[in-house]
Length: 384
Ligand code: NAD
Image (cartoon, rainbow, N blue to C red):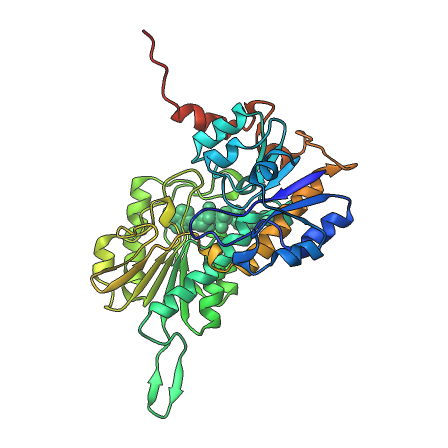
């Protein structure tokens, strides 16, 4: 079986889908690995390292996309790239399937089998394939480093001959994978940390990291399918805003990570809250691409409002490309190995890892949620 590793082309994308160590393991198992020339360059793996691991370096992109049985990527392909895939080939990549109806339709039309890394079930069995978690953890870590670099203060408490420095106060909103790593990183840097999440189940995890959990007395059910947060009512959102306002006001740094799968991110930090923060404070909004948790967030930009820096940098995992690639490569190669039986790709749709992850197969969108999303966004045909 021939597997291709593509060089990423999205601006700012520095990760690569497979690293040489894992190439060597796959080659040992009898797979033929093609790597696009320069694919590992931005994450510091040379063509030579891939060659030594047993891969073949390919410069002809038509061959690279068009011949292999399986194509591996980090970011979704653009229409021109996807157009080079042959019918019957398999694409494994992040695909943003619930926000990318055109790509989903194109892959189905081309009879490409595609598996979206974002849809790997969040189960113990699939933990080693869970790219959302491996990358979110990096984003949470890097968000704190960005905040620490932008904050005109120390993070830790310091007792010096010139006086005592009080520790920075960090407030983390959304204590999922990214939020928990942000709490841990801020604690390691010596900050005092508070955190809030609408899923009360995370209270103990927050406390075990040495942070204080902020309670919001919500009466409605906040946990939906697969343990993810649900979109809450307007009144619950207002109560949340009222309760967290004083914690935002007293924080030096606010890190927001709150998301609800398939929905716009909830607005939690209002313009008024920002205006009441101390000058020099910093907000890092990890939900920037989903509309932002802060009223002032602009995706991809850092902006100053009321002397508060609002950082909406996107794709933070790409800014830690060595370890982000290492972890993503482990996730994707584990999935690949899991799917290969007797040297061929075997998609057993009775297996929840396959049925949850596979979005297009044999000319159709085979994933219910993705199909419903694509149908709901496609234009109704005009009847004469
Ligand atoms: P996510 O990125 O979808 O959201 C981040 C956090 O924002 C979540 O904790 C969510 O509860 C919170 N949030 C949503 N709306 C909010 C609001 N209005 N106010 C405050 N917080 C809000 O979450 P994630 O990090 O991908 O984790 C999602 C779920 O998956 C969690 O239940 C997590 O425990 C679970 N998970 C399980 C596994 C596993 O079992 N292998 C691995 C990873 C994650």
